[in-house]
Amino acid sequence: MIRPEPSCYLSIEDTNKVIKRHFLDIFDYFVPDDLYKRIDKYMYYFEKRFWQENTDKQFPEIIPVCPNKAAKTFLEKTIARRLKEKELLIGFYLSSWEEIRQYGMCRQALHKVEMEN
Image (cartoon, rainbow, N blue to C red; front, top):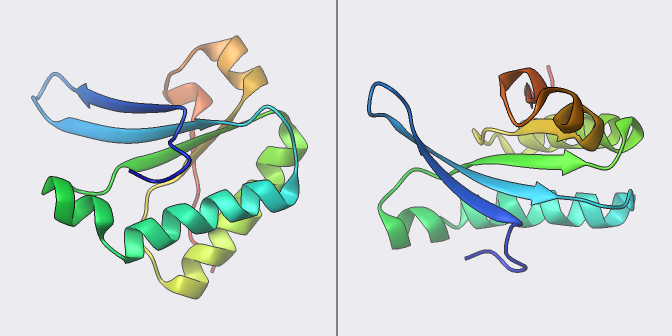
């Protein structure tokens, strides 16, 4: 498992019996270097195939929950740029504490990060 471990690991089975896996990482403070390093750790973990080779499962989607809008905007730009630089196909879905409070942990609160053009 990636270190430090994510806040939570989720394995959710939908009505079609499809299982989706997620790493949920909750950030309490906006420290750009910490956020940047954490994203790089996930990308390294994905690139080295640690999860895939030890579990025989696809790499989980990653859900960082940011403390505020500024952190979310910073992280979205950082992730989009890094996905393009490294040409990685990892699913990142961003949210913030405010969105989780408003909508709960649902699709409305999660925003997919698209690779930078």
